[in-house]
Length: 575
Image 1 (cartoon, one colour):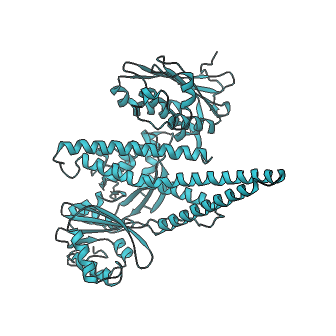
Image 2: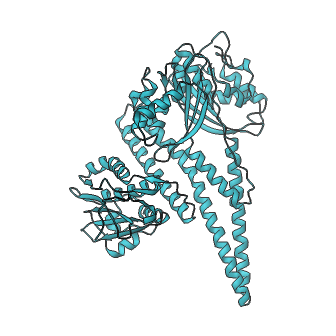
Image 3: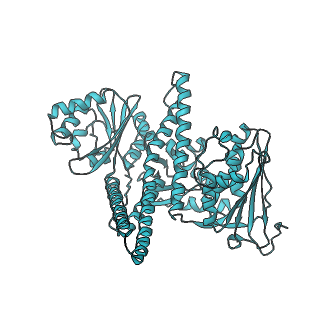
């Protein structure tokens, strides 16, 4: 098989080169043969689908993957064998398919499968959660600005290739990615480049023969003005001198035709891999959002000037001034919401910091060589994770203040969510010598609400309880039915407790109680305000009963309309 960027002289790149490329892609990729046995999948695939490493072993049958997912509830309720057999039969049809699936926890995956002529199929997995959130933010901005920005979508296409050997399998996967990819060796000679690379950079095929010097490609680009004015030879040589350092790099380049390409280079053992992503639509969206911000600021300024002039008018003018002030406050609130949404840009470098530090501290590409570096990397990873969680809390609070919380309602199993949170906090509880117990009855009703938001409430409350409970303390989770058929869920701890004044403070954003005690503990002061906002979105209430050194009891009450009581239920009622 000959690729678009290869000649008949070198039909295939070495398997280790292609494997290096696949492990550096942002997509998860798997390939099953005609008998539905796994031939290859990268670590990104296992991470996105939250699968154990043993399911990535070549030869593993597809049914093992499906059974694993079915047993943890990925496909909803039903008989496990029926759920698995139904999906195996669909897979055996080997039809092209593309869809998006929201996993438990809110992560959205775009899954695209393509059959291979030689038998089997290649499937790509891409995390589009942030993309979807970003698109929603843009659509909301469009509405506020008289729908002046049209919806933007990013089309991701995968390339199909025939496969004969392991080298062909890896090569086909590389050709199927939506990003441009190139690999140069230590002598800066081209090893392989895929079709998307050729399309994005508009390069002639004969310039991309394996063995072609990096300098030749740089010179070609310089001569056609890709790098701006100057001597093409000097511009090309400058890029060769930077490339020979083999240092990680990332930048955005605006091409002479107006498109934007994000270039990311990563050194590998035998050279370096570079990926190229067309982010033209994203840049255009950013420019539109910036224009929206300027227009909003201009509107706020205009309204403020009007208010100052109307201070000297009659009583009728004062009434008009109040109405104008209200409009200005609405515009200012919209501006605050807009700025909060823009802060998601912080999460992109943070995710890179967390991901790269995790790769280095786990010594994926070899030992670090110095224990102090490992210690610093753990600090970087921990700080990045904490900062990302803080940003997420701030964004959630901003959405609630802007009234942009949209609940995705479905029947929610409280028992299952409480157990899931207990499992997530188990290591932290053990480290603090804290016992977490749950005595929810099996007959606790399903709750009609947003599963992800209810999980967030439980996680915030139970993690707070663990955080502020001393060693050998206990945390008890219970529930009861009220007289009006509402449901109250209680989380009681034996922790440090609070005064009534402190209880009033902690439900206000960015506020913490008893600074002398809590300043040593991490936290943004947004956990309880977020819980209060989310339970109120569900039509319920939050109540806190606490006393210093006697623990705290937090109660979430769901209204009767959200409690799916069985007609014959025996769930305990409150007195």
